Structure formats: C-alpha cells, structure tokens
Amino acid sequence: MADDVKALSSQLAQDPDSLVYLRLGELLRQKRQLDAAHRVALTGLERHPHLADAHDLYARILADKRDYERAFDEWDMARRIAPDHVGALKGLAFLYFKVGDVAQATVHLEAAQRVAPDDPGIAQALALARGGGRAAAAEQALAPSPPPVAASAPEPLEEKQVFAGLEGAHEGLLLLDASGRVLGGALKDPGGARDVTDAVAAYLAGVSQEAARTAKLLSLGGWTALAAEGKQGHVHLTALAGDVLLLVVRDRSVPMGRLAVIAQRAAGAARRWLEQQR
Amino acid sequence: MSAAPAGYGQALDLVTRVRGVRGAMLVSADDGIVVAEQLMEGIKGPAVAALAGSVASRLGRALEAAGLGAGVFWHLQAEQGALLVVGAPSGILVVAVAEPDVNVGLVRLELLRAAEVVA
Image (tube, rainbow over all chains, first blue to last red; front, top):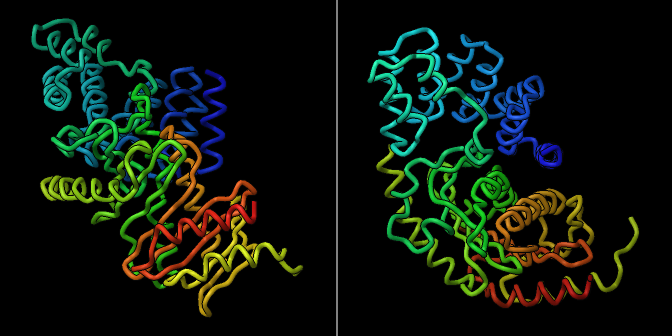
C-alpha cells in the first residue's frame, strides 16, 4: 500500500490537475494518515471546486477527524453540485443520525437508495431507521469507513442509460467532462479483467483544452476529434458540446476508420443523453 | 544554434512532399522543443511543438493506462485542418500539419518512414 501511495503521489506530481488525488486522498484516509489526506483533499478541492467528489472526499476526512460541522457543509455542497451524489446523501444521513434526527436521516437515505438500490449499507441503515432500531447501529452502517479504493473514484451517473444498446457500452465507451470526471460508460483493458475507467479519464483531463489551443495556434478552427493508435488498440476522442468528451476504445482488430464510425454513432446517443440531463 | 543532422531534413522532406501537408516538424517528446522544422510562414513552431508534445504525452499515458501499449500515431482533426504525429523510438515526435482533406493514410505512412530515419 505504501507503494501505491508513492505511485499515486508521483502521478499527481507529474500532473497536478489530475483527478488521481481523489484516490490518493482516499488511500491516505484508509491508512489513517488523516493530516496528509486532509492536505491532499484540500489542494485538490482548490483545483476542482466544482467537483462533487472533491467535496465528498474532504467531508469524509473531516468526519474521520470528528469535525462534523464542516463535514456537513462539504457534503451539503457536494449535494448542491450533484443532487444524486450517493456519498453526500449517505454522509448527510450519517450526520443526522449522529444528532438524533432520524426523520431527516431517513429522507436522505431514501434519496440515496433511489440512486443506489443495491447498496447494502443504505438498505441496512434504512431498515434500522424504519424499524425504530438504534440510531447508533444505523450510524455505524453509514459511517464513512474505508471503502475499496475504486469506490472513492467519481461515480458514473446513470452509466447504463448513456450507451444502452451500443456495442462496447460497458467496456469501450466513456463519456467524461473536460476535467476528467466520468459522466457515463466504462472502460476495461483488452483482456476485459481490469476496470481502467478512472485511470484513463484522469489522464485525459485537460486534453481538450490543449487540443483546442493547438488547433487555434494553427488556425485550424475548432477541433472535432483526436484519434490515437497504440500497439494493442486504438482510442478515438470526440469533442461534444459543453466540453464533454466521448472516448471510444477498441483493440487493434478494429481499424481506426471504423472506430470513427462507431464514435459517430455513440456521439449521437451521448448527445441525446446530455440533452435529457439539461 | 547548431545545424540539424542531414537525416532530419530528409525525414521532413518525406512528409512535406505529400499533397495537402502544410509543414512538418521534429519535436523532442520529453520537453516539446523543436528539433527541426519545415513550416509555412506564420506558424508558431515552438508553441505548436510544446502543445503537440503535451497532447502526445497525455494520450500516451491514457493508452498505457487502458492497456493498449505505447502510442504509435496520433491524429488531431479540426474544422480546417489536422495535426498528425508519430513517435520515433529515439524520443522524437514527427509532426505534420495538414489540410482537412489530406490523405491521412499516406501521411501516416510517410510519418512512420520519417520516424525510422530519425530513430
């Protein structure tokens, strides 16, 4: 785990704007290095003030430090940015249980369960709250105890709906914003065993600004797509409206020209989904 | 500034002779500095080189993270043109600035040949 901290710190040093700090902050929190986690989270929050996950991470660290008032503010902010943010809803429910306001805790838990119906922690806490169980037990079910590292990464919003019915919807299509935050879809490595969504998204943070600046310097007008060929596969990045990026990934058996066609089809689905979200 | 090796000029010639290519550059992948260039007047070579190097680096890391191995070829498509890049094993990026209707397949082949020349 120390190596993980070192590797993530190194990645962050190379690219301070990267979202890798979310994983680093969570890892340090799990290791109970709360002061270091606090520094990482706060620096990240300064760079990404509009990212709900940044506030969620900071709130969890503050809650671990028993600074519940500020934790409440941060989770409240996360929920204002992303009303369906499960981490924020759970965090607020946890704090309401702490002060004995079971009714408010239940309201937040019900909202969280609508977004994440399969979360066992929410179901358990809700059952305890509805059944008149002890608030302390419900609180425990919701406490921001160290979740797996992957769970600390930005949660895809309604990912299943974005590319529903399209080939590769769950392993080769990804929708993300300019700062590398995942909006939908998922990526797996060519073997299909490893989820690489967050890592790839983090590396692509900022690439749209650089592509735009390059095109502007060359008087090429707006950039429309960025394709890259790797030794084992290809990626195709399409610029959608509002700085949203669509990434299509396929192995080398799919030629780059066909990748552009797949990207065009997926872009249509993504645009429709984005319109529905507005 | 010392003169670039003769092979560099040959590499750039391979790329710029393709119809629709406005210019070509050799860029150090590590620091985004121009090594040699044949660009049309008015193109800010050093700035483009720095940004092209940075975009290539980000894409390269994304490819690696996706398990797709090292990057071979990058293609930035824009409304009025394109930027095409191939990385040479020597750590030099061969960059072409092209018209929007350029034969991308041909430019890619010539960039790969040029990358062999500067390898």
